[in-house]
Structures are given as C-alpha cells and as structure tokens.
Length: 330
Figure 1 (spheres, helix red, strand yellow):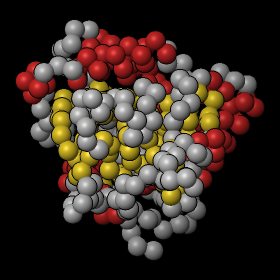
Figure 2 (cartoon, one colour):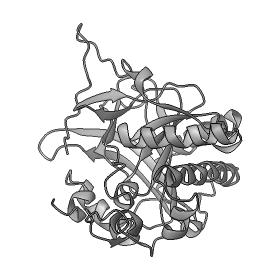
Figure 3 (cartoon, rainbow, N blue to C red):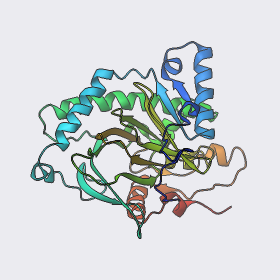
Figure 4 (cartoon, rainbow, N blue to C red):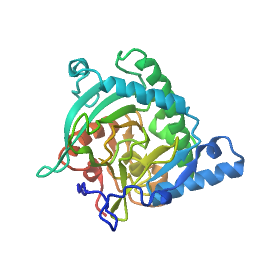
C-alpha cells in the first residue's frame, strides 16, 4: 500500500484533485428504490459495475434532506470549536469505546510526514452513542444516522443482487440487523486555526460500504490506475466506497477502495463518514455460494469482525493493511 501523499499535479504544476471527477460513476438512488422494475435492474447493474470497476461511486437522490446534512455540519463544527478541556472528556481509548475523540497528528510515513486532523467517532448501531454537548447534538445525530443507515442497507441489497444473490442474502449472512455502524466526523481546521499540512493517510475502511458527505471543501482522493484522483464535488451527493468486508465476502470481486485525504484549501473541511458492517460477533469470510457454487478457492481467511477491527487499528498506524493479513496467496 502506497503512502505517498503528494497530490496529482497538472501540466502547469498546480494541484488538480478533481480533473477526472466526471469519470467517477454516479448512481441514482431513487431508481434503485422507487423506479420501475427496469429502472431497478439497471441501477443494480450500474452498482455492480461501479463496485467492480471503480470500487466507489457518487450517490445522488438519496433522500437524506440537505437541511439535515447542513445542520449536522454546523453542529459538528460547534463540537470541535469547544475547548480542549471540554473535548478531553470524550478522549479516545479502545477501538470499541462507544465515543472517541482525538486531536493531533496522524502518521503518514514512519520516516517522513504527518498530517493534522481532529475526529469524533461514535458507535451508532446497534446501540446509539453521542456526546451530550453541544445541546441538541445527540438528537440531530440520531436522526442523521437513521437516515444514512437506511440508505446503506438499501445499497447493500443492490450489491447483493449485483452479485447474483437475492436482495436480503447479505443481510442474513452477515447479521446486518445487528450490524456495527459508526459515525466518524473528521475536522480539518482552516489555515487560520492551524497552519500545518492537513489530511489523512491512505487507507481502506472496515465493513461493507462507507458513505461520506463533505462540507464543500475538497480533499477526498481515491486510487485509480496507480494515480490519486479527486472524488466529491457533486452537490448533495454521498461518496460511497467499497470496504474491506465487501472484498472479503465477494472473494475479491469487489475490491476495497484505497483512499486518502489531502486538504490544500485554506478553509476548514468537515466530513461525515458512515462505515457500515456486519455484527461484531459475525465471522466473515468469502460467501459459500461464491466459493462452493462456482468451484473457486477462498482468497481470504475468515475472521470475526470484532477481531478484524482490533487488527486494523494496530496495523494502520504502521502503514499496513489488515486485508493483507488475511489474504491467501494465490
């Protein structure tokens, strides 16, 4: 996994994080859920192609109110604008702590670079957790994660169908009704607040699909053809990324998407990130229908989801990928 953090440069030497934006697939969620049978079938086909060819797509017409998203952005900014002493109450400890807050440098290369961000991570399903301040934060976040979870679960149905399964197959196999869902809020301060490099090192996410919403300040980049390309910039859309357990379950057909954040804009950047995965006690390996039904050998060792989370946390700080630990050499 490359840990190079230099942005792609155009011919005149300027950063161009969105120069191939129009190539990233765009999926219309409304066709998946409320279109005709033909619309639904086309949406499923498009999801499968996007997951296989790109490992990501932009999701439009998802039904999460734009006003709710803006309120979440404003409330998130209010949280990070609290004093350090106030935020210290929610300081990060274990990976499964229900509320974790951290501010500081995150390692990019053991011998080279660091980047700055703050984050708040909340376990929001199967049990909902949120700081009690600022006032109204918990109620707002609860509504937001219910809406985004509903979107994610419908997308998983579409993914399941795209793999040739019935819509609820992945839900049953991975116990998604008790699935582990996070709300991770990332805050990259403006240059006025903190004049250092801001961003997040290259990584993949745990779970099946990650939904990401940004406040209009660019920064998300995905790997494509060995180069970093910008993702985002579509009004009122979610960036959706394949995650590790989708790659595992599909036996490598839908690869987990390597991505990073590089913030060059002087404004503050806020992202609302929803990783969605199986239940903590579910052992995830390649689907038996893929391995047995098509006479293919498994390419990943099964592992309990909670154990994978612990493994991922330990390895990512060393610039390693937990998928590499369970991948079976061909």
